[in-house]
Length: 304
Length: 266
Picture 1: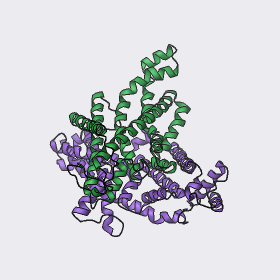
Picture 2: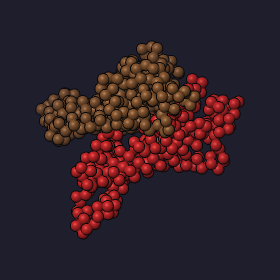
Picture 3: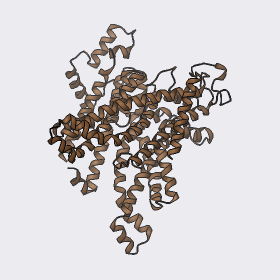
Picture 4: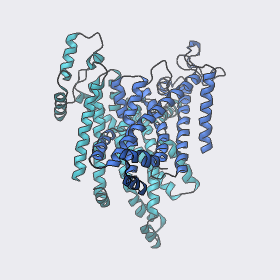
């Protein structure tokens, strides 16, 4: 437990160092890259001072961490807005998208996985496995446009992109959710099959319980544990996976903010986005781990 | 399944060679053919500048393949070296090295590659650099885990007691046993690096115009999706067929070499 916390802190510290160093990786003078060659000397000096680039590296880092600790993510060079204010609308949009994608993934993935496990070895199982393996390998920049073509252009059921209508979230969420459902299908299938071979399932069957009760009440409960972990881990990577999906569907989340900031060479915003996504990922993973330990006592012994 | 994969790969190889022989470069702008649908002249149609799509896709395959092979080789060399040292020496060395991999793993997916590519600026060399910077971690993890158990094998202990140096033990007694699992991992990573390269190019961080790259083509294709759906469908389907074939090849290799501990379970 203590070790896990210590590990969390070192990882967070490492993430801070790495994101801090990002701006120093810019070839040449970052200030010149950001402002362009036509900027006046005074402007350059002002920005350099604002970013603290004229100070020694170590004190820059200290300043960076100190700023973050006070909830200050710096300022956008383009819009002059505090980055925290940008995040106030962007971050919830990304979370919303990720959550809906997760719901879609669960709604499709878990039932399909159960079905495949019950039909293990038969043709239904093969079809489900085949589809899910292929679906999991589909990059979002391929799945997204296909969904857009089918549902928005040809069928006209859903808006193409943007955030104007509430239904606009459906396509990006489906894009992320379908890939996720494939992973969940495979996990559910494997996990349920494993549990169905356990002794207590034989006992339940021997007691004369109906197959339905055996699967739903006895097997599924035990099988869901690994799925909880996957949900947690995937939730974190969903936040990163949204970068391209948000760009395709013009969804104004953190991912699109990141891409926009890269195009405009607004490095402080880039830095803040990377940090925000990475920290969310680390914290969600940590929380998943903790929940898992709490739910399954075996884990506590196994890993420490 | 194996024959399908082989067939697709061969088809691509032949197409690329044919394209080279015929001198197709996909750079000829023909404004009368802007976004033309597939026809006898342009089998796959034309893009937004009237350039032949098939020729551009073939060039895209080449670039994509070269990038993924180079990145896989470089990141594998780094990752395996780190993993061997961490697994072999254990203790402090292991702790420090694994702490570093933990930090890299804290950035989900290709986020870190995006960040590196963003600050380094666009271009193929920077793109490969960014992918290598993030790609070595999984090899390091895999190699370390394997080395941890392998270093206690009898034959390793035997040569150690005969006075073999640690470097020799790693090079001649542990590394050869890792080769099959690394080969499978490398096959899958070819496919995932192709996707990563396309993702970065899609975001405008990779290969720059007028050179063909799948990611950049897909980005343009999405923009013209309403008027020319064949553009996005053909480019996407081409990319998917190649990735599918490589993954199938990986599955086959894994089954053949009988690797159970691979991260890519079915």
